[in-house]
Length: 342
Image (cartoon, helix red, strand yellow):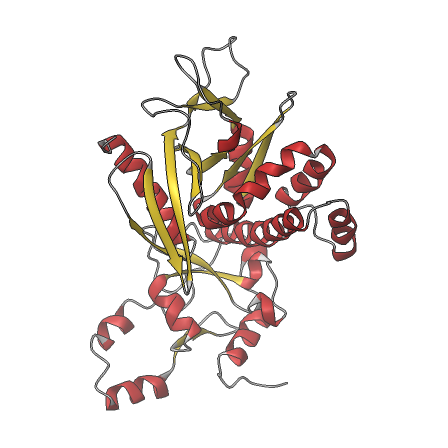
């Protein structure tokens, strides 16, 4: 069926999410379901995407409080699955900015007048804070619905079947739920919990969730602390990301005090050491790097760059959220800046 304006709007959300996940993509058709090819490096994934808006589950008193659903209208049944592509059955909730993913293999071969699939809003609220949430229907034919943020879109796609396979293993669902809530944060305890999971694939899903939950929790805290302003220029415009001062892979942490909210320009400039904040929150320009660019005649708009750069960091309101001087000093060292020694 040709894509309606409504479906195009929803597929734009999918497109934005794939890009936010660090992948590129192209639409292969203009139908619903839509075929999308996503790629990163030498990896390519083809997706067949069914998507509807998540709406309230029904009149109060008729359906459980907090239930949301998609209604599978205007598509032929059964839903299409096969080799060479991943079938996604998705809902999008505009108010929370969260997706819901449902198990396409739980859908019947035929359905009635108004078929629907449900999830609880509490799962979406969890995903808004940590990246993922889940809702398990405690029925004879158990099913798990997964809520996920746009930045986690490709994590869900890559682990889709394994996410939904948890439905048949109640004990393992408890471990997944702890991971989703960020409660598997001690290495020894996490290892014991992972040992309870029988499948290597499902263990990998939990590890992915643990890593992503830490990242998303850090992102949410940092962006909230800076009110989504770039700490170096004050820009908002939804062009601001949460950046680590000291990267996690070199013994940095996910503490808010190890983060800066930066627009894309100043994030790149910071990582390339064109500008850095020092221990006193002053923003310093790498004059030797600028001089090199002048010699190469690659300094166009230099004055505009300087003009829109603050002299001191825009700081969070709470002292506890402000960047740690120790992290800032280490961040300068890692980016090749000389620092004073005691």
